[in-house]
Structures are given as structure tokens and as C-alpha cells.
Image (cartoon, rainbow, N blue to C red; front, side, top):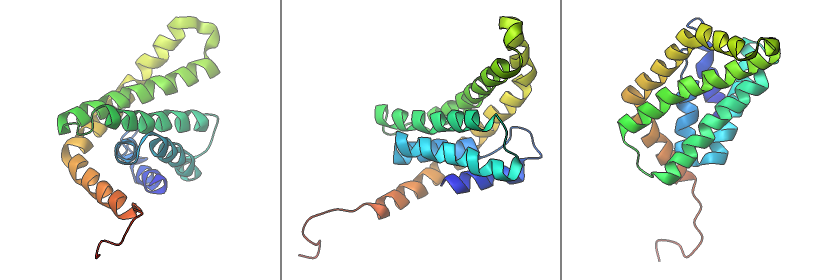
Length: 169
């Protein structure tokens, strides 16, 4: 799933911040839980940057996408069957939260002497990109969310191992 999420980012590189990676990471967290969601998110960032370029931002992308997957897993524990609209709003919010986390990294790395005004300027400059990210998440959850979640649940159920007497007895 991490590789699939990473490879889904590459064809959309020409469209800044429009990518299905966050959508797939959140879906993985919802279905497989917080730790798997975190691993899918961090793996997606690491693998996709082999194609798009590594830099000092890579660990922060790994953290941000990992937290997106983990928080989705926690959401699934708090509310086992979230609605399509609820998932779409969650994806929309993560578009902006991801941008906020990356803005914090950018500000701390390049603008620490500017204080809060530098952080606000960086956030204002990235707002159109964060909005594109958030809206792409919203659209993907509204269009493909239930279908992708259904397929991942089916895959999860096929991977389950149960111990006990065989079912044919």
C-alpha cells in the first residue's frame, strides 16, 4: 500500500499538491489501523521521493503522511463506520494539516529569525497549494472513497488468520 500510494503521487507531480497519496494513506489507516496507516504514509513519502527528489523535507513529509494514516486509524476506532461526508471532511482537513506541518518545517529551516510573521507569510504563500491538496482529498473521498474502502476491507478480511477447528466440521 505504501508503494501504491507513492506511485500514485508521481503522475500528478505536474499538478502541484494534487495527489491521491493522502487519500490512500487515510484509507489504509481507516481499514488497517493507526500503526499500519503510519507506516503506509511514511513509506509513501520515502518511496515517492526516489522519483521526485529527496531533500531535508523528506522526513517531515514522512511524519506528516504517517500522522495522516495514524489519525485515520484512531478515527476508525472512535467511529467505526464514518459517513462518506465525514470522511470527505476528514480528507479536506488533512490537506490543510499536511500543509501546516510542512510550513512549520519550512519556517523552522529557513525563516526562524522572522518569527511569527515569517510563519504567517509562508502559510499565506502555500495556501493555494494546501487548498488544492485539500480539495483533491475531498473529491477523491466523495468519488472513490467507499469503493476503495470496500476493496481494502475485503483484502484485510482475506488476510485474516483464525485459529480453531476447520469450518467444514
